Length: 567
Ligand code: C2E
Ligand code: CA
Ligand code: CA
Image 1 (cartoon, rainbow, N blue to C red):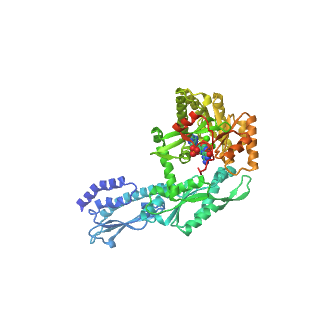
Image 2 (cartoon, helix red, strand yellow):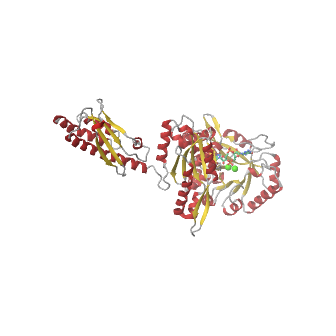
Image 3 (spheres, helix red, strand yellow):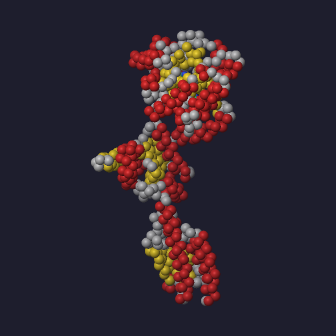
């Protein structure tokens, strides 16, 4: 007997080490006990370990579990019971039974007590870890699972193979910024909590609702009728009380913008959230309340990701080129200028600007393209002049996104100077602004260019935020009337509008050009109203450099015919 207790003492070190190295694993107890069990004649150890809230190992151990079982079997009659309490206040116990035909001696019990007390500490440490982990998985305000907590639950369903029973949603609340503004952020938080309290009621135990933070939510809802109900509820809104600063209560209808997808196998973990997020982005871009992810939407998102990733390489590989579209004096037919438009030959396939410009604008890379275009245009103009050819002023497009860069006017000037191009040979074209805020940036940008003596033009005139005040407030040299003004059946009200724009511009010494002119009757109509500077398929589409050079050589259009086509 003595010798076997000495052995226990040796193995005690191993016992403690194993537990120490596995701070957050209750399973480690089984391994640890296997080192001492023989010497103490242990037949079986049964743990009654209280459950924890989390879905981690603790929860899996909620029921009684066997921590050790000897090959010799065990005798339940002579069991030794050790009770303990966890830090969360729950009761637990470990019941140790000897091998058959053995009764624990007092000395055995002393050793057992020591081992069980160490196990008690170990279990409590595991409980503490699991509590900490659990609290880090909860969104503080709404007590819903946060991103980690949600992913953990979703991953569990993925592992169990049940994830495809669900539709996956990603949604955020419409105008919650306004609510915060109106009610203050404290009451805003309260409103958010009331909203989620209502929302929670909808979900059953099988489904998962998560709060990523801010007003961003995700959820997994059973396919079919349940999903349809949620779609309706999110978009129609939930009525929530709001307390106004003056103490009076109002009813608010809080609705969401949502993206969702039917989950089909196989699916990756990331896709569970990324899929509906793509659909949500699509909903926002298209000003819809809810969008279901389709292959088409998904492909477009992949496409824009790939544009974003390949853009810089493509630029370095000379895949981008400049096409030139002539601007023409409609009375004389003379080419009086041109506009530079970008084209992307990706693996020799022509990609149209409408595919990549919005992506580059969104990702802030448009700046690089626009400066590249300016530089290429300056190179071309300087080459034309060096070889004794005629050059005409060329418009270069700059995106509104570019205006965030305060150094841009300076960069533009530097490029023009570097290639020895006259300032009068370049026109910087920007589209009308969409908001008051943008407008301030724009005035600043145009003012700087004007100070440098560089001409500017307002593109798509008539479609923006403040067309007429633009004429007065902006230091500009040209406006380009948008083709939407002339490509419909022209009626008398259009006539009045275009005419007054042209008249006003003339008085302010701003020149007027109209783009998108395809038909002779449009040319004649514009002539009658006093606009003889035209750009459009009536003369030419944007042309590759070599073709444009040939047109420049001729210098004018003598006979024109209507453009018949749908592009
Ligand atoms: P935009 O600046 O308004 O350019 C005029 C667009 O109208 C061009 O389309 C041109 O090909 C097209 N167009 C010209 N005349 C006619 C016509 O008679 N009928 C019709 N149906 N269309 C006509 P494109 O080249 O596809 O460019 C589309 C837009 O992409 C441009 O609109 C511009 O906003 C943007 N873009 C193109 N290149 C650049 C660039 O280098 N930088 C920036 N920031 N934007 C660019
Ligand atoms: Ca333009
Ligand atoms: Ca335009």
